[in-house]
Image (tube, rainbow, N blue to C red; front, side, top):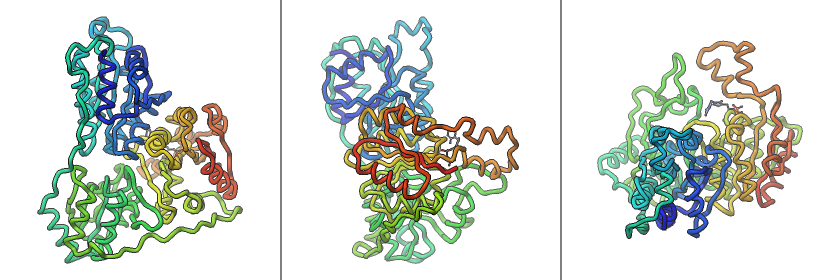
Length: 521
Ligand SMILES: Cc1ncc(C[n+]2csc(CCOP(=O)(O)OP(=O)(O)O)c2C)c(N)n1
């Protein structure tokens, strides 16, 4: 057995069963090992941002890390933006990054670079295997890191000679990696949260993030709210929010500063469960960075090291709310907007809520078009909602690839601005190659629309011609039908509600991927 085969065995033994890859010469022995060691699902991405974003989407749906295979420093560098998003989402990933054979490093060949230096800002753990004999130990530690609680990004640098040399010890395989346990809950914050809710429920907000956004946790939050009159909200970004008709209403904190301030203005205290002190995305002249009102008390109850569901259950118990009934969100109308209605964020949200199939996984990179979707889709058939946690666009299409692989049998709906989709359009090819059940909806407004608002918001005034040219995507217009077909996907262009509803329903009923271009301007 060589080092590469030892690593593939180690990954499989550790429960890492999917590898998103974009290899080069230094990774050829790892690629060969994928042939010789059965069991790994290997998925090729044609750009490293697809590979890392897919690993994020896969983790979000499975709570299990995938591996990535990346080509030295430049390959890893191409994947960093989506590793940043994955890190913010607390998605566990094992990156395997090939490197030159150790003796070759001294020659400073063209692809030589500081791989560990490139890896470190987006990795919690970085290790270079010194020899084939070390690969199993290092690989196992990478998996332990990726399966920690909260999960971590582990980057294992695999020199070509460590991959191709035979393993000379007995330690080529090290066996399974146990599931990391949550940290036990502290009594003091639990008692403080219970006391606050008991004495001033209507002045208290439960702000949920991380795993507190899963349905079972939200049910406890719903019971606590029903018993105490407290509010329940989700942080603006959530790795996976399980929501929809019949489930507890969990409105998301708005993105923009003024509506976010307004949403939080009335609370005297905020109990944080998997969420952190809410802050604005950016600084704006004259606006606060922290969103909680002055004087509002913050009560941190559980962080991602804790079990959010057990925390909320314990809190419900203290409040005598174990058996309290809560009202689920009523089912949204299944009637789509009339065909003569304009396609705008309001009609698009209502239409989506009307036709979304039960069990759908929505990957939301709809940016300005999707701003109102939260309220409008709250009563859609039960579904999961994934957002790009790190604010780095180009997350949506790759994450949809990983989500579809992690949740087979469920329809993935990737909602994307046209600007965002152009960062990682190669994901479309992987959807076609793997025949993934993904419906890609491109909101073609031919602009970086959100930045037009941000331009004014930061006090930059009115954009002139040169500034405007940096914010619009005209000259030429992108042809999404041609782009989709070029990547192997059937595509439709729609400009009216009926056409969109028909195209969505057809796509949901047809196995495999398709792309709908929604013409908004
Ligand atoms: C990696 C990265 N580069 C640039 C940005 C800045 N940025 C934020 S939104 C945006 C434009 C999004 O355009 P689009 O997806 O078409 O959505 P729209 O704003 O038109 O709704 C840009 C460039 C970013 N967030 N991440």
